[in-house]
Image (cartoon, rainbow over all chains, first blue to last red; front, side, top):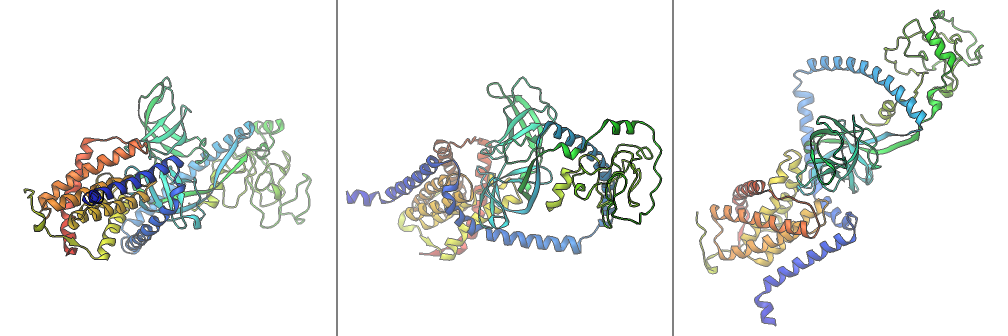
Length: 404
Length: 173
């Protein structure tokens, strides 16, 4: 027996090492599909590799910043001019979108939808990958210490990237949407068909669960549906590139991700989401008299004189705002200049939600700071409180907390 | 260039200092994880930990040392991904064992032999990896001969260059 073992010692050891690994694999597969039971071992590997990656990224960024910010400034003036033009265009676009949001918000309130907003994000840098095409994930330089938790959504300004798979003290693993074990609840923008997004073995992204009798055209945008409880609804996912017959009764829809997953540098981790019921109170009551007043021609109000008795309650029953109170804009932003004669004054409590505290229609402005009949296309000034419908703009809510 | 059959007495066995033994595999793993950030296709075609496994196994010419080197490097590579730990471990254990066993019997010092051996070991590694991934872990992986051949050639070519540099660190045992 000893001579046999001695003769085939190498082979015996090979079999032993292989057996141990197969056993370990079997245990992992049997226990669960997630990677929690091997977390401790992975922490060691991550702790060995990621410090080097962080240092290299830091050195790379520092050198790049030095060059771009202090040495290579060619074309900055032209770019600045171009960006200013872009800002002007975006402002106009914003006004239009605000109006759409107002309408959407009102409808949501009527239908008692639950709304989800991204209320807080953490910016993170991609520092490495798994180094294998069978495991499509990246490492980011934010972990438990940065408030990152498992299953948080990871996005960029272009669209969704993936979800947090494992969290270590100072780094996290992010499973990309093109990994074959990932899944995202999605909806097609135009046809409103729902499906789920999956990665394939070759790193492509496909949309599954859409019946073959549905009409899906290449070029249609895909958004998150919010059904997976990870990604908030309405984030860009990608664009349909190819539609063909798939397995059983479903279509095989190939998607080009909105984000270039191969060249990720900075990402945002959604660390806090707000979910709340839309309330009709936010919209404000629309009375028949209001609608009638909008349609009927009216004479613009005279500019109000500066009241000496600031803080007293005027005839309308609403206290005039004190010094430092937000400026006011017309209640009916859709009206043409000169048409909207009414100026509403939100009560201090109504400054953010606008509903209660509105002056009755036809009442005079109570303060000289109140603006008269501002054109609807003009963007709101900073600090301005809109007293019209839809007092909470999701975009504003996002920008307050997110680093963007 | 021909692969010459040589008797065991004629072959030299090499060893490496501790910093090289630990540092080179770690560097390979680090680059494998870091470089795809800049070159996304790299992870698909290149397998630096495999090249390091083959090199150490062939240079040491000790099957036990070879299989253990392969096992450690492979398991470490598994830890950096999210799939169950052991898939790369098993594949690289087999490659490490075979590379060191062949190193005992063949002269693996010349570039041609190294190129052909790396080419062959890449396919063996892929075969074992696919078998384990599909058979045990149920990972859906598609094998493409075109991609596999390109990857094998790329690894073999890089391997010859890499081995040339690593030769500077080897010491006669």
